[in-house]
Image 1 (cartoon, helix red, strand yellow):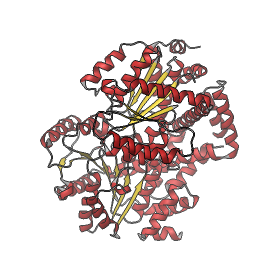
Image 2 (spheres, rainbow over the protein chains, first blue to last red):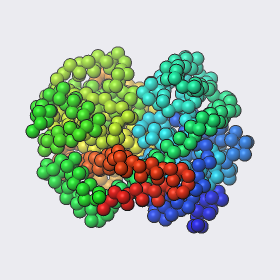
Image 3 (cartoon, one colour):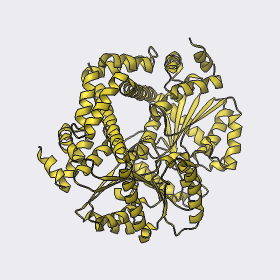
Image 4 (tube, each protein chain N blue to C red):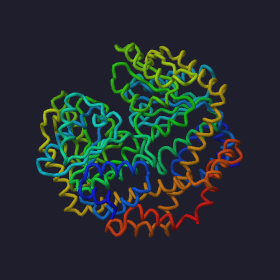
Length: 313
Length: 313
C-alpha cells in the first residue's frame, strides 16, 4: 500500500488534504490511492445540510460539531458554497467558532467552490467523502445551498439530509415546494427566535402531511437557534435516531449502494470526457465536427453519434 | 423535412412547445427534427440574465421584452429557476406583465425546473435555445439564479451576460467576488431607488477595474428600476452595443463555436449515459460491479475502468 494511503487511513490531516488536492486535479496518482482506501469506507454517517443563503447553515454545523466532538466522534466538514463562511467569508462570531474547530485535530474542514473543478463538482465531492470516510471520520457533514442541480446531486449521497428553513423568509418555503421536500429527512427551523416560527412550522407540517402519508416515518420538524446553541442537542438526537432507523430498516445498505452507484456514474462520466476531449487523436475529430457544426454541414446530434461511433465497440 | 420541423421554422408556437417537450423527454423523434432545424440556427442574440433571488430578474426581463417588441424583434424567454415568477410563483404586478407577454404571439416563454430533466438540465436548455433560435427568435433571454454549477454552465452559452445586483444585499457582491465576475458582460444595479446604490456601484467598479485592466472593453455598470421601467432603454442600448462589439471583434464566431462545443459535449454525455445505464447487457455488468464495490472487493475507480474496457474500442 502506498504511503499516502497509509497516512490517510491513520487520519493524518496533511495526507488527507494532499490526497483531496490530487483527486480534485484528476491526478493519476490519486486513482491508485483511492483504490487502496476504498475497503476502509462505508463507516461514516454522512449528513447533508441544505438551505438558502443566510439560513445559518455554517453556524449550525459548528454547533453540531461541538456536540459530536463531546461524544468523541471525529468530524469531517465539506462546504460547497462559494459564499459559505467556511470559504473565508465569515462574520466575526462565526470566525471564532471556526477557529476553535480548525485547531481541533479531530475535525477536518474542506471548502469547495462550485466551479473550476476538473471533472465536475459532484465527482470531486464524492472523492472527498470517500477520503474522509476512509480516514476514520465518524460523521461527515456536507453543506450546500439549496438551489441548483449539482447541489442536489451532491446531497443525494447523504444518509441523513437536513433542510434548513428560516421563519419569515417566504423564499424558503417556496423552495421546499419546488422540490427540496422529497430529500428532507429532518426539517430544521433555524433562527427560531424570529417572528413567524409557528407559521413556518405549520406550513412545513402541512407539506409533510401530504408527502408522508404512506411512509412509516414522519419527517420531524426541529427548532433551533444556532447562534445561541439552542435546540442543537435535540437535533443531534434526532439525527442519530434517523441513522438507527436506517439501520433497523436495512435502508442504510440501499443508501450505501446508491452512493457507490452515484460515485461510479461520476467516475465513468469523468473518464469518458477525458478520453474524448483529451486524447489527441480524438481531438482532431472533435475539432473537425465543430467546424462542420458551425458551417451547418452537420447538426450536433449527428456529430455526437459519429464521434461515439469512433470510440464505442 | 419533417412536419414539426417545418412548423417550428415558421415560428408556430404549439410546434415549438411540442418539440421542446420531445427533446426534454429524450424522445428519439426529437433527434431527427433537431438535425433538420440546425442549419437555421445561429441568428439569435442570446442574453443570459443572472442574479440572486429577489433581484428582480423576471420584472427586468418583462421590461426588456417590451422594448425589444417595440423594435419588432421576436423574443424567447427561458426561465431556469423553480421559484421564478415565470414558473407560476408570480406576484400580482408581475402577473399582469406576464399575461401581456403570454398573449403576444412574438414572445415564447418556457420555464424549466432545475431537476427531473432526463439527460440533465444543461443539455435540455441547449436544446431549447437551439429550437427558439431556429424558430426565428431575434433575442433569447435565459434567466438563472446566480448560484450553482449547472446554472453557470448554462449561462456560458449566452452571447451577452447580465449580472444583476441589488443595493444593500451584501450577498450579491459576495457572490460576485466568488466567481460570477468573470462571466459578466454588463452589470445591472437593479432597484436603484434603494439606499446604498452609490456604494454598490463603487464596489462593482473596484472589482471591474481589477478584472478589466487588460481588456479593451470595460464592463459597463447600468442602473435600473425595473418595476417602473426606468433605465431599461439605456440597458437595451448597452446590450445591443455589446453585440456589435462581438461582431466587430469577430468574438461572436468564437462564441458560437463555444456554444456548439458545449452542446456537443452535453449530447455526448447524455448518449453515453443512456448507453451505459439503459442497455440491458451492460446493466448486468454495472449491477455486478456495484455488488463488488459494496462488498469492498473492488473500488469505484477500478470498476469504472473495467466497465469502460467493455464498451470502448
